Length: 170
Image (cartoon, rainbow, N blue to C red; front, side, top):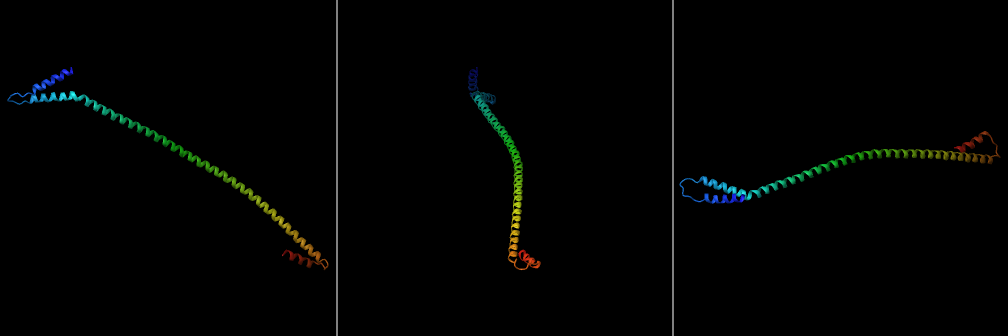
């Protein structure tokens, strides 16, 4: 049917385009001629142009859809990253609190151990001091006894004994 229509349009175009010897204007024939030409052009290239623009619109829509999917995916990844960041911050806070507690426990343990060792050192020092005092007293007593025994031949009175003791103490 469309082929018959095209053939009819071509024949009418040829018929109306012929030059007639009229004295008037041929605006009607030219208008009909233009309409027939435009219809013929539309008939021949209209469908490929429609297909081109339809496919172009579809490809643009597909690209837009892909871009939207990538945007949605990047938004989801951003949300995941933010969630991981907040989780890491919470973990860091917990870790800082735990390390402070451990530090305090270790510090208290070290301080307790140092106090115990200090007490032990003080006790050892006191016992050494007592030992040295007893040793010194023993030596002084020994020296006094030896000196008094050496002077036993002489007369022993209180003044002499006091002088001997004062010499040793001083």
